[in-house]
Image 1 (cartoon, helix red, strand yellow):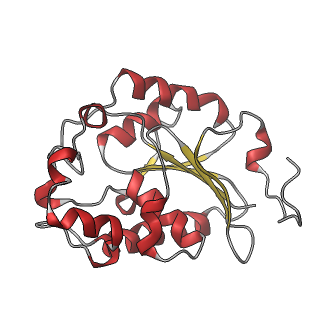
Image 2 (cartoon, rainbow, N blue to C red):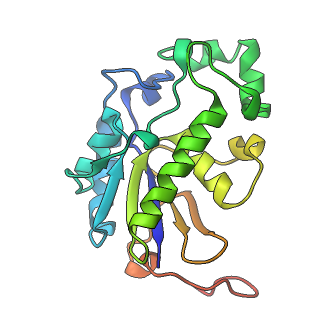
Length: 211
């Protein structure tokens, strides 16, 4: 089996304040985020391989979830939002570029930052490296909302311009089974089942999963 659990960092002070944190320094988990991260420790206890974005809120989530030694992987970093970093989301929503971010992210380059396609390419490549390194074993990656959505869209072979239709809240987990020719997305932005069954590859079933 090659199961990858993608964990979005717990709620941060920026999330709570409606600020686009991006790669800004000084953004930590708030009390809710710390509780979310701590709650993952038990359900992830059997996972031996862990990776994290270099950004503090992800490293904090990894540590509280029981992975203080998680490997830092730059490819899992947040999108570089450039000049938008640190801005209020409600103010950004009035910018002309905002509509394109929602409708046509493949055409977006943030002023002073990176393109959304570049974010997609590096995060998908990072995941491919993790899966190749741990073929047959589960792994967990602590990263950010847009990277997780980009990875899931790629696994589903969904056009990148549709990736904003996915919802990945802070503190949530998403699970992809890479043990088959076409990846199986088993969970998107949800809570990990405390049973160990989420670490086991399952065949696609006609009529749907029986649990």
